[in-house]
Image 1 (cartoon, each protein chain N blue to C red):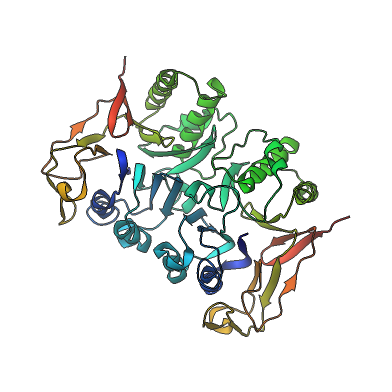
Image 2: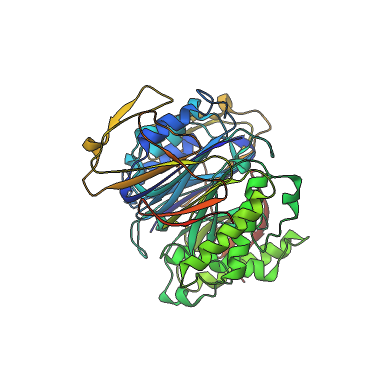
Length: 261
Length: 261
């Protein structure tokens, strides 16, 4: 299994504090030694950093901790390989362009062997993971139904929820997906979230000795939500998503929820 | 204008020495302050680093100099913006997946306004540059002609040369393109290359006080070619491509050349 972390914020926000805790799970406090990656949607575009080595030893991961990249949406993943060897092509997050936007995706879980028969519709995996195959399946289905982005985004969200439900039937499928505006978080077994807004307080990491006083780093209007496989801090109240639940985030707030029938 | 640098090698090789000289042109010895990027095809996959800030001041660029990433193909670019604002979405190299491979591209030059009417065939630009539009045009044409990779790669190369010639008619179009196996280098006005093989000697950078003795870093079988807008060293004999020439590289050696009719 792997671990996921995502962020949605209404102002460009750096993820250094949360990432510092998260990366310790990549070979330090957690067993996820098989690579890591992080993707940033910044004001001017998209970029990602991926490394097939343990995040706790990675000079690139240390750089990300020390170099505040201000983003509205972040997706990160640390890997404990099951399907697919330990290599860069199998390292999340995965990216594809659709409708002139970079879509980014990371998956925690494992699907049954049936995933190989999921139709791809023009998006082809580069690596050999069930995760990337499922991503290509989702992208292909979305583009098949909507050659252009639909005017009513709720039609897209409802379809995305159905696709996630279909994948959940094949195994464990916790997922983060974004087009840079919206962050989609789907829970199959494990996903927790917290929204921080004024009045801001202090937070203490669970995985490293580190405390931050958000008052010193925020303005009263900031709204920042963090979503992770397991809560990253131990003195705040994280909420868990329900199995089968898709939560759609924008600018740090929930704008839609879809639950299992 | 911008500057390009590429590498093709028969063994995984780091680009630290060449990149150390190249990045100085990004706001140091050269005027290309509007961002930089580098893409690596490693044994296990593909990754890229991009930054919309001058490479000479960039902590990410410094990391790339100090952290040897061993690759068979590298594409790098430093930008002096003409078409498209200074932002991440306009920062080269650009990437798209085709046939289950990540294709990477960087461009030096500027096209006339006619580039906006080049057909896209399913690949859509994320940013606003002529460069990315031309990349999407090339990818769309290749996939239109070859829904699957052709058995005879020379058919692909001949088509690619025709497409590059078509783009050269619109302006200045020096280009690097790769699918990870082959490196394609097309010259419209300026592109030089050098192939290093045994017996290896010393090389001195033109843009920084730095010398490397390749004997200490290679085995007698290594073949490493570097391609750049301008020669990166001043004590070696670089060769220039001809305008209209497409050179196809594999494992450090030239495997095909196409010249203008």
